[in-house]
Figure 1: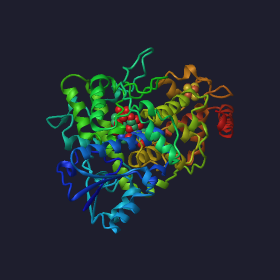
Figure 2 (figure 1 turned 180 degrees about the vertical axis):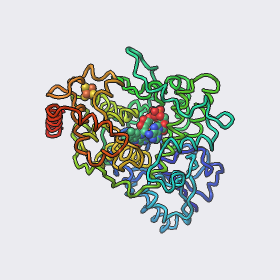
Figure 3 (figure 1 turned 60 degrees about the horizontal axis):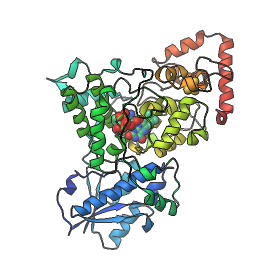
Figure 4 (figure 1 turned 90 degrees about the vertical axis):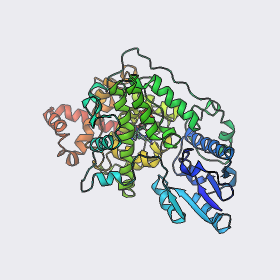
Length: 500
Ligand SMILES: Cc1cc2nc3c(=O)[nH]c(=O)nc-3n(C[C@H](O)[C@H](O)[C@H](O)COP(=O)(O)OP(=O)(O)OC[C@H]3O[C@@H](n4cnc5c(N)ncnc54)[C@H](O)[C@@H]3O)c2cc1C
Ligand code: SF4
């Protein structure tokens, strides 16, 4: 018997494995192993989402006539590699076939056990494509990779030139949220996953965040994922570009697609999502700035960070450019902080297992970096809390883009900001306990002093970066008394981090 392993993030019913039913010679295995549930402190919705989707997928395979062995939690499987070895030793399986695991940890563990390894048939590039594109270079540059992708795929190209004559329309994007504006409401699913939630309770798997098990909102199969895609294209793509960087009190979704879980579980293919967006543009249903901005996230960023992951792992996982050592304050896990921007981003993450990009980068990521948290702690938090968090995409985004722990391989400068940026892009500051206008003193927005303290502490590492020179020139021009007051305020914050 041939055993074909399907991992929790390989739920692609379009995979060529499944084109033919070979039930007498091929058995598909889906395994709920403890190691996969415990390698990070996972959000309840993340566990429910992946396990419920795996169960649904197995049911669909059976319905199509495939032979399936579903190893659920009650089997007490510790880890997938040992299970595969045991199945072979027992004689039940003579030959193991796997799809390339996207996580380095699993790739290392499963590769030696596999008799045949096939592609997941999901991504638009190979693992080594980014490394090849930047061969001999010290840093990676997304824009250069993205343009190459546009040229080779022909996406948003007209007669060999970028649609509209430009590669990038960000000048028309990144607008602040208009006062009183409401994004269209999104229709969520309402799956009842209370039994599964109880099973997880019974086996004692630690979890955090809101489960929403009674009305679980996320898509659990390809058909449902396609519904989310259609709704996004019809209702939200049109304003994706202008408001992609906005931060709005009590509006967690804005014009974002909410497709990352379905994409990362491989229910959807990146190319079909991109093509749906391009089609909307070609039919005049969405403007170019929004369409290009959205497509860039998937054709550019998503493929790019995956390539960096494979080029740089495993060393990437231990990089700590700033030698940051702090643990995370408890409010990162409860959302109970008086900083309005942080409490909104964290509380939304706890209740939805999702936050949009700017919340992840410029609120929580910014705070983690300014406060000097150890990148391992930051990685664990991001890997655990988001339903779309799989290491190949989470780690380059967290350790690289957000924490600059790679010293600039992925981004040309650290993404840090004072309160001014949050104030410009959000309506949080008006309801915050702190004043964004004040720079020093007990009422001042903590980000204001932390921003300068960060640059002062890391001057030796950052000063020569041409993109940061201006910051140091401004700092040097400030009078000494003001500088001392900023650093005093920052010292107080570092010493009373739990009280923020
Ligand atoms: C610190 C940090 C951690 C992150 N961790 C993850 C993660 O674990 N998993 C994950 O899928 N994304 C991650 N991202 C990227 C991005 O924030 C999410 O993909 C996005 O918020 C998901 O919501 P959405 O589907 O509504 O995305 P949209 O804003 O609608 O974007 C469309 C799609 O583009 C892709 N995309 C957008 N930005 C990125 C990016 N920077 N890298 C890779 N793909 C991107 C995603 O597939 C997303 O679904 C992270 C970003 C940061 C700053
Ligand atoms: S004042 Fe500062 S802490 Fe408060 S919401 Fe604004 S940026 Fe965030």
